[in-house]
Amino acid sequence: MAIYGYRAWRLCEYGNFLLALAIPVRWHKTMRAQCLELSSLLDNEKPIPLGPAPHYHCRCGIYAYNIDYTDDIYTAMRALIASGRHKTLSDGIYDFLGYYLDSDVVWGYVWLWGRIIEHEWGYRAQYARMLTLFLPYETPHYKEINAELRDGYECEVIGYSLPHIKSALLNEFR
Ligand SMILES: [Zn+2]
Image (cartoon, rainbow, N blue to C red; front, side, top):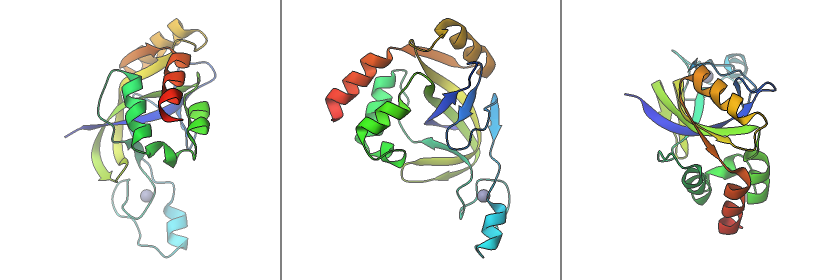
């Protein structure tokens, strides 16, 4: 059974695809996790992972936060910050909003399936696919990029006002 999660990407230079934030891997319509830590695990004498990624004693997998689904980015960001999950990315609210809520960062929901490891803050999954993306109107070439992402990932792309959402979140959480 598929479940959904919330996560972020960085828009590539030409705006026609998304890159993962932690490791700048290009996202395709459907993603399958690969373990990049096998060699370091063998060096560290930890248990050897068996089967497909993600592995339990590992950091591999496709990451997503367990935030309730909404088509309103304010509600999603509010839930993320109120729960403290943003602290996995940044220490302070100013740093977080300055760096992770910007015109080249795209937040959204993904479907997750296959092997899924559940954590307190979210999931590490074997497969993922776009469900909904939130794109700031302030993104250069907004209309074209909205269409590129919608067609390329076959998902819904919802526009929002970046300064409006940012100032509303700052007012609430500073
Ligand atoms: Zn692994």
